[in-house]
Length: 98
Image (tube, rainbow, N blue to C red; front, side):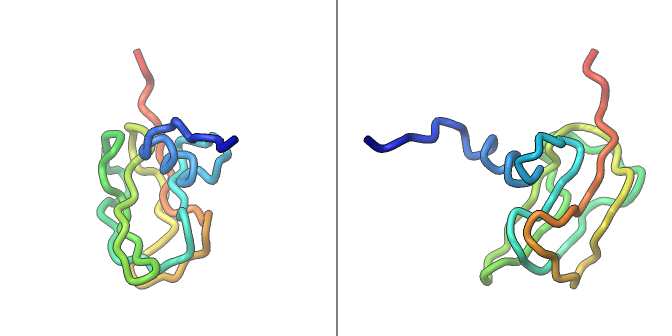
């Protein structure tokens, strides 16, 4: 019998982006690659799903979205950096759900 993964692509990407750790305020590289763009600065307010980093891996560009809405508190990469899989890229201070 074959197991079927019923999660959406967004759910799967969020799990990879957080390293499967459930830390939703940290965007991590889903695979090794080179940082092509960083589209935010410290202090920027972002919505869940906004593109924060563009990663080039295997000759493809991959947009990495914000896992949650919040404020960018730390940026651990810069354009041109080579990063390992699961390396932290951006830390967010999540907005409170009220």
